[in-house]
Length: 79
Image: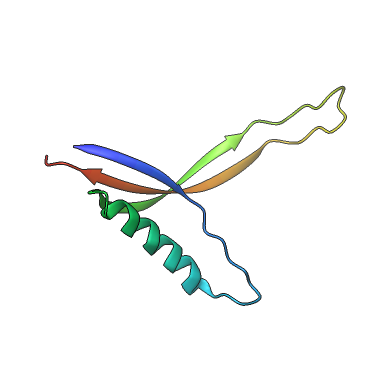
């Protein structure tokens, strides 16, 4: 079995869009890969720690932080 994992970052204009816009973006991504022969499996959340940036002599230093990303998982082929 073959797998494909694709990052998914939804965008929303809060002034004139609802969460339906996010659902539509995800649906379009799933359709795009389904048309290429991939089967949608699930949406996964992946967390990672982004290392701190010490800056130059402490100037512009940025602390480390935890970031979360959404990944869409597809598969292709028989088991």
